[in-house]
Image (tube, rainbow, N blue to C red; front, side, top):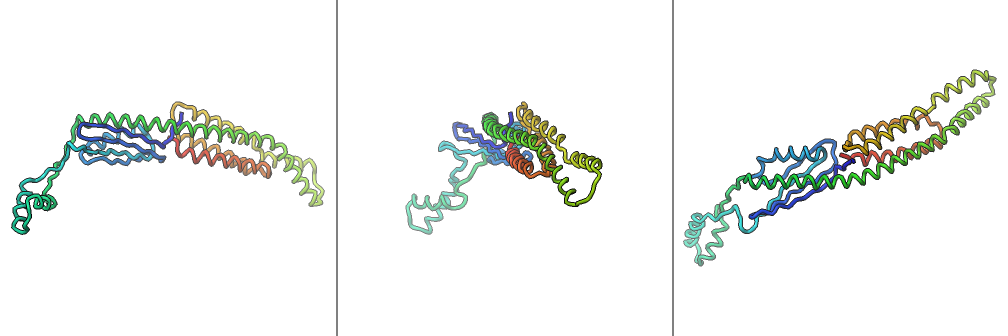
Length: 285
């Protein structure tokens, strides 16, 4: 079953001193493009995270984020007592105020708070790593669900092209008769005596040049191949794109050979359906 490259996954990890939210967003892209946002103290694990994402998501424009919210029981900022006391002592010589007001002023001054750099906790990362696995599962479930919608649309479009091809096959005898009639009419207008046998030979040669039997057969095969790949065990958007190009090649050749207005109208409809397949195909993993 095919998968979409569009997806979303989110996992919230509640730890004793913090809440960690892991978020994954995915959009279509020709290749794998991973954008990572995480706190600096997790940076040493970024390469491992990228490898995990590459293996689990394969292709697409990926936004990966880790958000951390500390609860009230934990803070990396501490009051620098010695600095604050010195500020208060100096301020007493400048302003006439009580200790509470002096403290309020001092705490706003530079270096009153010192921030302790948080170090990576390996046990904590193991929980985060498991949560990343869970988020990848969620986004892949989303991709499969989106793939079902793409699958149904592809089946509809391929079916429409198959029906239009049947119309072309029905129209073809009328097209050949029309070509013959137009040539005979042109010869008649020239008011020139011609060798009927030679004319018939040239007519057969000309009609053979306009024959679309091979294109019809190849187009049928390409359409069947597209359906086969849709139902395959692996989602392969690049392969579907290649088959779509081959389908377009046969449709264009039929259009260039048609030389008949009614058939050209059907070819335009086929091209319209194919464009919708191409557009949706950009989203397939």
